[in-house]
Image (cartoon, rainbow, N blue to C red; front, top):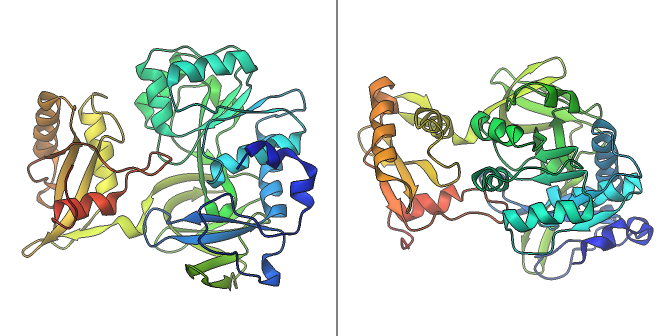
Length: 376
């Protein structure tokens, strides 16, 4: 799909159901799906499904982001994410809403080429995932003066990498979102660029109302919420409309008024020796203990079944990580951690499986550890 199609009035006025790619068979002909776009997602866990978002919801989200980031007709949105994901699709929608140019980075990801493209096209606004930000920092590239904002989504950009990016002039802004919300729910403002980078807190966009359950699970409602879910396979698809005004997520957050702080997924918590443990929190601790020497996305803490403890925690690293850094970090973690958070001996894999947006495919890593999938 040519993303520039998404900047035309004809696309947004077309009532035909649309998917940016990957749908097996014909889109089911439900009247409720007219004027909708379907995005495939597995979220952070679970089986793939297709989220149905109305074109109006997508444009409502785009307008909210544009207002938040002071996007004008003279601005230039740059697309460097896959347009079949809602994050990339949303960039094109924002260009259409603002009536400003959309430029597409059509090359295989390369930080040096990307930096040159930003200059050549005069990009003012773009969206990246944490892996891309890390690559820009690792290459020591400085941001062009024309760049006003980088919305970082699709994962957690740690404080060390974010601040290193800011020091090089990259105006990174942490965001929190999901496909079900047509992209962003909360995004740091331009005023946050005047202070040191922090991954949270993140202010909600004005189109969203939010609350939390007793378990700190986030619930949201707003005009950009999805219409329903399409599930099935091949030509046997079924549409399940969203029946409630409020959508219950599986994300645990702290909420203070309109300010949100993500604290993890409820469905990533596991029991070790009777205690609830968040493996992703341990990953962030390892990054801190390594003094930034570990590279986010090149390692993971994976829970595997254990007869005595219910689960055991295995640190898995991608080949190429410095063995001395790994061992020093794991020793430091063992010295400060309670017994139920202790890690087993590290496992090295040739390459960790990732999604097109750079998210680790944790279920696949676990399958390799359990011998259900061949290690590379």
